Amino acid sequence: MTGIGVEAGAQAARSRALAVLRVRGRALGVAVLPAAAEVILLAGAATGHLVGPGWDAARWAVGVLAVLVLLATAGIALVVARARPAMTPTVPVAEESAPDLYRMVRDLAERLAVPAPSAIALTPDCDSWLEDRTHPAHGPPVRTGPGAADMPGEGRRPRRVPVAPVLVIGSPFLWWMRVGELRAVIAPVVAGTGPSAQPDIAAARRFVRGLDATLAVAATPRRGPLARGACAVLGRVARLLLGACREHAAQMERGVAAAAAERAQTVDYGLRIVAQEQVGLAYAGWDRLLTRVALPAWRMGRWPSRLDAGVVAALTELSRRDRLAEGFTSRLGERPACDLLEEPGSVDEATSLLAARLFHGGPAGPRADWAPVDWQSYPEEVVDRTWRADAARLHRVLDSLGPRPARHTAAPTLARILDHLTELTDPATELTDPATGPTDPATGPMDPAGPAATAPGAALVPAHIDADTDADTGLTAADDPDEDDDPGTERSALLAAGLSAEVAREENAVPRGATAAGQSPPCTLWDGGALPLVPLQPPRTARELLTDHITAMVCCAAVDTAGAVPALDWLDGPSLLLHGERAADLTPRVLSLIEEGDPGPLRDWLAAAGIRPEKPIRLV
Image (cartoon, rainbow, N blue to C red; front, side):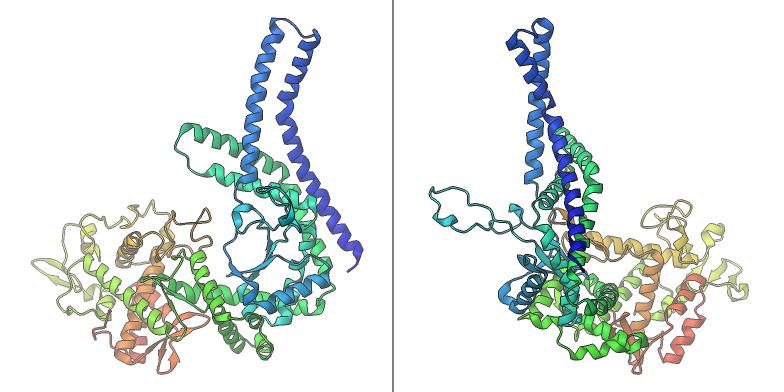
């Protein structure tokens, strides 16, 4: 690093900031043009040069236009200045709860010769950044300057002092990284406080954030026609100004980042190369933990209260399985960065709840249908309950499709599912009665009215649903955009459609703000935005729903008849342990049953595992 590199980046950022401010100046100049024209017309009348009826009418017209434009400009400027900028939801970390972390950040800022961040916050994501929270709507009163209390005149507003931005750190970094690695990773971020203190850059950033917040204000639904018209004008002006300064703002941020990175090269440069590898590893482990482990719990109304500790377990498991990660286990003997917190457990719980709020749309706090769960209770509280809830839903949908065959008892069994989805392709296996015609072993006599009525599974469709119509969306097969996701056989398609409709009804029955099997209701808000802000996965397709439910049914049968136990795999989520080993190769056999109507591979797997499909299972 050299001072030349830092200076070049800072100068480039400042020049772009001035370009953004020039856009603001031009907009203001355009706004005062009618007023300037009115001044000229009035001066002409006063000097006796611009007189006559035509000039009088022009003075009136231009004057009215100038007043309207000035009023509109004042209103827009007020909204831009007062609109609340978006703020990332985070978990604040007070200095009393993490004195070592604050001390490390201040020492780092001193080595970089930049202002120290004003506060530290954690986010449930693998990223770190600086966030300006100096807007009055964002929290505590503005910091006052020295001697403000001694100034005479009660009620006088205190003098503002520049406040450094807040340092936001990804919580997985604190638990997975060592102290030295965390310092090396956040060094370029902390170095960004230097350019942020430059007045022109700070003013340009405030202007851009104000325009962005103004767009959010303009997009707020309004009832009255006058309010809708005003918002339309406000939004159009804000979009015009943002379009004019977007490129300059982007280049300004690139210059700030380049200057910060150049300045941070003097601090732990060699260690930063190693730490960047840990960033990628932490991101992969965190993403897998959320999608494979946390999401099933959230769908069941449980939120894991130690997600950050879980990512350490997940990455440790990865290092055990993957020879490329063998060297990472030696790091576990060093001091983890979470030791910089006084109470890492409570911080982990807060960030875990925030993760559920952001990625799933759960409630803001614990309640009867939204309870925390620790990792020791996860197999029983989440895995087993998820399987049995899915199995119960599968049997409810199957009951709604038609009468239960006589050879199956009232108790739920896996054999009933296998018989229902079995596709009869051999004519010799079909029973024919001379009086009633063909007979299906699963459903009884078949209506000889025609192919549509006698197709396998058609008799199981409720009367109000056509066999070729999706039970959830009402679309025919020709109109359905998810036609490529057809589960396979007609019986599988009907059962999948029923499951999709049942899941949709359950989601709609969940109160707003509560957990749901898919995404939270669109009206749930956080800081003006809908939750979840970052959905982890799109809603499951019909094929995925049917596969998950049949797999859950198989797992319930294994637990109840073969002594299997539910378990947690840190990388793959809920798993089944058969005879002390993880069950494998189950999904391809389930797909063979769904797509081809062939139960042979699944029956062979069940027989080899000692699972008896004819035995009743417990659903609750």
